[in-house]
Structures are given as structure tokens and as C-alpha cells.
Length: 436
Ligand SMILES: [Zn+2]
Ligand SMILES: [Zn+2]
Ligand SMILES: [Zn+2]
Image (cartoon, rainbow, N blue to C red):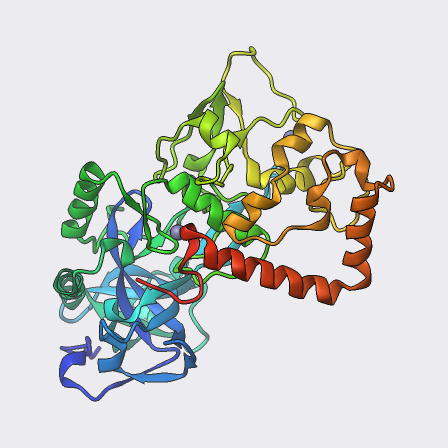
């Protein structure tokens, strides 16, 4: 078997072009603050507009602010039968996220698309190899019918870890610029034959744990802005995601029950419990905050995304025990999944049983808070109690009528309203263009 001696492209001295579909190496941060090398295959290249190809020099330039979307390839250790050199071989699979569907035994899996800064990319030119010569049969189920796959040598990959880390240091970009992976992952970081994690970047891992010790400000993993109040800041992202307000984020907020600290779902560590006003969770991004203050919200701190107890759910044990809680902004989703017989302001039609008043109060947001967070106000959010939805209280009826007869105008008005809100809100200056 012929394995190239230098499979890693050297971007500095080349006129190489990087095209969509090309493989590349980059460093990925994991929720436990480890940083590991990953092989990705690009799905799109963006520098304001989508491009199908780009000069490699431009791609990795820190000033160009290019972003590359890509899927992470799962590699397995092997060795060249002739030279006995260590290799990493693609088993044909991509990294998928596993999200449990609440209250069922079912979980969904989908390929995780990562967004990586161009400057943190090392384009590679893997060897095309015969899979059956390098992988045991049980790892070849997703190899194509031609029995060919990609392989990279271990040594140059170790060198790329240093190359990318050096670029991070030289350009002084925050470590938080490395793409973050949360949730339950199977197959990444890559592991050696004995199951120990491989291709880790020890320097960055150390730097990350140091940063956590000395900084009171933390970097938001989704938008890379630094914040002294991550819980409130993340609440803004979550609410905007739930209400369909687009933001350009390095990593999107998860659709299903996003955690109030990390914005992701599927990580069992992110389960949140409440013991009176004490928030209990093992989310790796958790930060301390004052529950009563956050629960009430304020002018300067409009986010009220705190864990609340759903009293419609059965809670066993003593009254003083810690109870499983639901983040407030996830309550409407929780009602849809677990108590679909009830009406709530987020349902397209106000059908169903009226919600108990205390649940209603737990999920309603005032229009002030929505404006501050850059979120459009929905007509039925204004209702002080569920009973107003069907009764013809004048103001509610007018709003509903306007909403149905001139939905287009309403949408335009909403759009203008939250454009203004975003412009005037100090907490969300950036959503229009990605700033690193
Ligand atoms: Zn953010
Ligand atoms: Zn979390
Ligand atoms: Zn419930």
C-alpha cells in the first residue's frame, strides 16, 4: 500500500484552492474543556456569501473571517501493514448527536454540522485506501461498495494540532473561537485501540481550565461574546431561537429543551433540579446566579429564564426534596409534550383546557422583556389569564382580529419592532453580522 509521505497540505506556500466537499482538520472544544483534533468534510464556505471554492491563503487568513461548515468524520486507529506506521482511517460514518425524546425510550440521531473559523482550518489531502485492508469487518458497514476510504498518518496529524494552536496564540483569538461540541457523543474524541482518547491538544486544555479559574467573565460558546451573566445572556439566545428570530451563531441553540446555561440538549449532565431556590445541575457551563432576582427580571436584566417546577407533573418524595425542573422558556414545549390537553399562548389556536393561573404566570413574558431581548410579541402573550383568550375582552379581540386579517402587516410590524429592539438593546448588538 502506498501512503503519501506528506499528506497534509501546506497552505502557506501554495496557490491551493479549497472547494466545498474538501476534508480539513481543526481543533474542537468539548464540554468537559478538552480540546481534540477532528477531521471534517466541508459542506459550505461562507464569507458573507456562500462560496463553492476559495484560495487557501484567504481561507486561513485571520482578517478574512471565513466560516466553513462541515460534518465530522469518525476515524479509527489502524496501521499500514507494510511500514507499520500508525494511521487514522475513516469508517464511513459521521458524528451524530443523540437527543432523547422526553418521556419516551426513543432518541433521535442526526449528523452534527459544525461551523469553524477559516483561520483554524488545516486543509488535508487524505490517502485513498482499501478499507478491508485496514479496518476489521465490523467497522466497515458504512464503507462504500468500492471498499475505498480515507486514511491519514498519525504523525502529521499530531503536528497539525501544534500548527493550529500556534495560529490561535499568534492571532490572539480567544480559545472560545474553537468550535464547541456538547451533548452525548459516540466516537469522538477519536480513541486508540485501548479506548483512551487520542489526538488531544494538551496546551489548549490547560489554557481553558486556567481561564475558568481566573475569569469572572465567561465567553458565550454560541456567539463568542464575553458576558458576566451567562444565564441571562443565554436566555436571550434561547428565546430568540424559540421565537424564530435569526441570529448568526457559531453553534445554534438546540431545538429540544435547550439547557439554560449551554443552550444545548441531550447532555444528561444538563438535567436541572430545583430545591426551593437552589438550582442543581451538572451542566459544564453552569454559572451561579441569584434565583429570586433572575426570576423577577428587571430593566437591566430582562431575561427570566430560570428553572421552574411544573405543578402539572407528578413529583414524588418529600416536599423539601430537590425536584426535576423545567427552564421557563422551555415550558411551552414541555406543555406540548407532556400536557397537550392544555392551552397556552404559543399554540397556534387557543384550544384546550385553561392553564392554572400560576403556570400561566410562570410562562408569560411582558412585552418589555421581549423587546429588550429582541423577540416579537405574540398577540396572546398579552392575555393576563387564559380565560381572556376565548372571551371577547376588547383589546384581546382586536389584537387577535388584526393578527388574523392582516397577518402580513402584522409580521412587518413585528419585524420592525424587533429590529428596533435589537438596535436599542445593549445586550444584543451583534446579531446582524458575526463578530469574533
Ligand atoms: Zn451569546
Ligand atoms: Zn447545559
Ligand atoms: Zn409538567
